[in-house]
Amino acid sequence: MTNDVSSPDLKLGLIGDNIAASRSPLLHRLAGAQIGMVVTYDRLVPRDMNLDFDGVFAFARDNGFRGINVTYPYKEKVVAKLQIDDPLVRGIGACNTVIFGGDTPKGHNTDYSGFMAAYQNVRGEAAPGVVLMIGTGGVGRAVVFGLVGLGATELRLIDRDLPKAEALAADLRKTAPQVTVTVGDNAEAAAAGATGLINCTPVGMVGYGGTPLPRAAMAGAQWVFDAVYTPTDTEFLTDAAAEGLTIISGWELFFFQGVHAWKFFAGLPLDQAALRSELLSERHPL
Image (tube, rainbow, N blue to C red; front, side, top):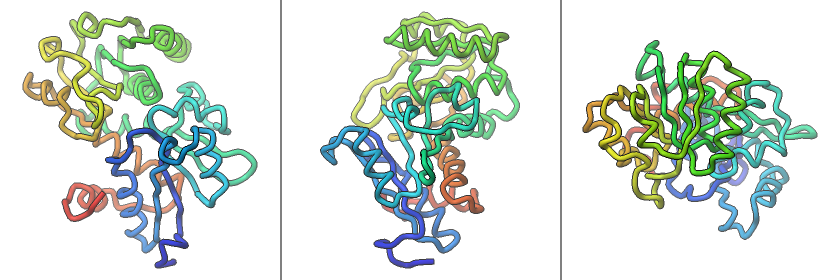
């Protein structure tokens, strides 16, 4: 194993916008350190590199990266560049993990598996029930397929881009005809009678203030999940906690999607408890 960051054992990266606060670099460096590997994990922001997404992807592919994570707003766009072997991931239509090597990069989705693990870590075997999900982009597609896997009975999809939401609804109806799926653009109205409330928009993220759902509309729900994890305590989650709802934070999705991505990147064992403890400590810089 090398000790030289200029010649790491594993070279990784993250393509996305507004990722300065991402803790993914730290997660993967710590994962490598557990087994004596030097891991580099670069933030690859298209505008900072004076490139478009295609240019940044080509840069990573051609410059020794073992793999990359892909985040907002490129999870759906990247699919056209990848070989996707898992039919479920093809159905989701979004990838957040890419492995280079061979003729065509391979695509995976650890948001899907990561969300299911995050949900079960907090709520165990409790069924999701009737779920309102706001935002039907890349992470939303992964989360909603995870909800199907967890046994959700009804899914209410809300998005300002109704054709995008309708496209996801059509995919869900083909995959899970037993689940009732509706589409709309009014989150407050759709929240009535919902068991679970989910934010899969960037609203609440550092740089995107506010909340996608007023606190008053949360009454009667049982649990909430926010895909945003920077900051961890978004207004959406703070309001939900004040209403007495069970909280599943975006940090949990971040943690489990990272753990699952590590398996693709390195294929090596990981002490999850130790990694969680180190990530939650204040000793490590971003």
